[in-house]
Length: 518
Image (cartoon, rainbow, N blue to C red; front, top):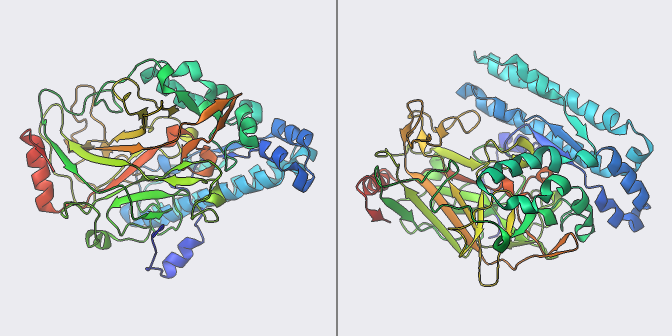
């Protein structure tokens, strides 16, 4: 209880544990050292607030290109080796992050310390790792894009040109296009991780890496922008024509506390490959070491036993000073994911049709990731986030803010998955290109086939945070990679299809004939 236990440790698994600092989307990251936290700690280590400010004025972040997202054509028999090397890239980033955060005094006394002792060595390690990726690909006859070698270098940014300005602002702009009204609270660009990062509770959230006041907005003060049933692409999932039915599966809310910090899709064989904690419903055998055969034979929390699919998402926590079971664990408190884990009061899982025509069955073991756990670093190209409150879902959907809901209203997280499939692959090298969203007219591009669209709606009873003098009191936040600062734009959702063939056929028939089934 409280965490998946792993029984399948092999020599490969032992080696994988050595790479347990792997981040889930592979090879890229933004290193953020919360220098303001050291002012809070000054009485313990002799580090003065003035020294803290001096260090913060030097280097606060290191931004590394995301190699994993660029690898779109990796031969199947090279993917495990490449995945291991991507895990190494992320381990290198986490080690540099830890060094940046633990050498504040040296940085204050030497303006070249970060470049010479952290960024330079990091580039050398990344270059060697990217070259091993090249070898893995070419060894099996694949083609390696030599331009990827240029992604070894990481850049530094000071506190005045921080992640909130250079990265967070991108997501915010993306959110503003769909989310008019958020700009009135658009402090993320000016304050994300900088001013409020130092003010809030003295250290930018209970874990020292967010969230901050600028990440929250009173939903009653946001201009209405929502359309019921509209997904990431601004289109209804199904309309007055096409396949109009639905199929609902009831799989619970993870009352049995099935958690782990793995991600078998993007980091197979790597313990703590997600660097944050997941809720799992449905399939009960999902961890980094689960084979498709083991997943197919697992038990399920779904009422319909023909659904052994795995549905998983990062946990939501209340940062009210409390601790949970993973306070001293990797992926938990050791990596800034702290506070009380909140169990959803509702987890609604529904599949809907295509606006233009019929859908086809999803293949067994199809993997789909929607959203981007590194969106604060990577930009909003793959972000797919909807935050709202009960009673406001038809009016307001937020993308880069956490809502503060009025009394009697609950926090809602909604994700609509990609619903076009290439007709051949159950996964792809970057875990994205085998599926896509529909085009503007509702059809699938490039010969892709329409499949049932998964929609997940999670509802939580969350005590409303309070904003006081530029700080947030008792915030809540989604678990993230440490360098992504608990930004709401990083919310994401994962799915692996293990419906029985009979149940999948029933789903397709229900959707295509306009029925509502479960």
